[in-house]
Figure 1 (spheres, rainbow, N blue to C red):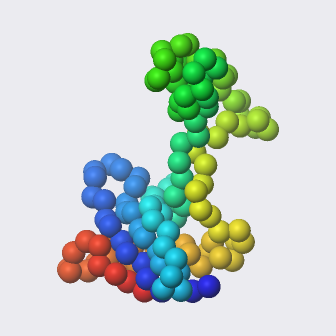
Figure 2 (cartoon, rainbow, N blue to C red):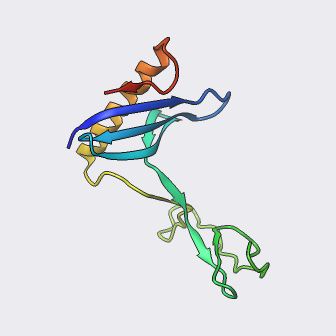
Figure 3 (tube, rainbow, N blue to C red):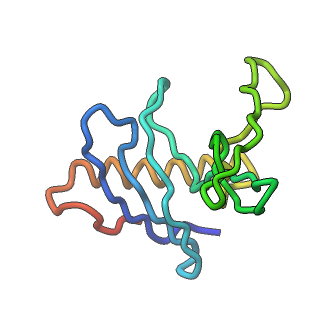
Length: 133
């Protein structure tokens, strides 16, 4: 599988770790949107698209975001799940990847291509969102 296009949309918000959103096309036939470029403590990295995990209300079954105290649909009080402690095996995930690479080799391939396109877009006078391969 080959990355045939990377589109970069820069984010210039001051003091934000989010530097860009990208859209990656594979083999000119499959697209993954909302891959993020993040400025982490060890430098830039790529975060795969994710969604917030939701839990159902015991009364109406409406799916609420983790950490909500009351149901957004019926107003019932939701069960409070205690925060996990450092090193706890049962760490509660607030976000779950929608799409992600299975192998470390492919993850590195995606990260290298995305960061290469990001750096190119940052220095480009053409503007935001131009395709790069």
